[in-house]
Image (cartoon, rainbow, N blue to C red; front, side):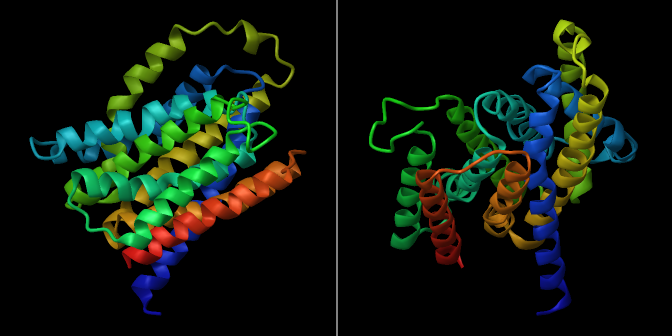
Length: 291
């Protein structure tokens, strides 16, 4: 393995560590704040960290980059930052991490539909298997009773769809920029919206919480590591190694998400374990076939 490949794999595992822990940090933040507030605190924390880089790189905004960066800002970061904590009001953090494994599947689908990515039979099978696994994960108790669905899981699936659009945007339109340049400029647009939402929020729930300050700390950490650093890193990895390799970080995220969830007292039943394996097989087939 050469130095570049080693660095790519090191970045991949570092991302999995950061994002695998993000779900449990969101869960902690939701003890005191609603999902709008968790998102806004997260986004503003990331913005403050990245602001010096944004000022330095303002000249990189031009007619060629402005639209993709706006898509990265709102489709790839802000809206998913609402959807993930909304989903986690009714979905355990370990299941949220597992559902996030669908990102490479949607990266492939949107790549084929809109970016002329070539595909094959094995990839199509992988996509179908992934959707079956996701359907199993969003059923509550019995996989065969699809009327009994946890519809909050659909918010997380929608977030993975939006995030896959983000990955394709970076891969096809922003390769001339560095990862931290893309992230810092994106959060420059996100910050005003997040600030407005936070200012207009009702903090009654937070003000009566016994864990307010520790939950605020968790959410700020989520912003710094789960957004500012992780988004910069994944953008860099997309540019270095391509969209499918970068999105395959979701192979590893569930390992960390499940670990942190179990440490926090969450459990997995047999159906969820089987569905997890099905989703992992799906992502493997999509990624392996692409290579």
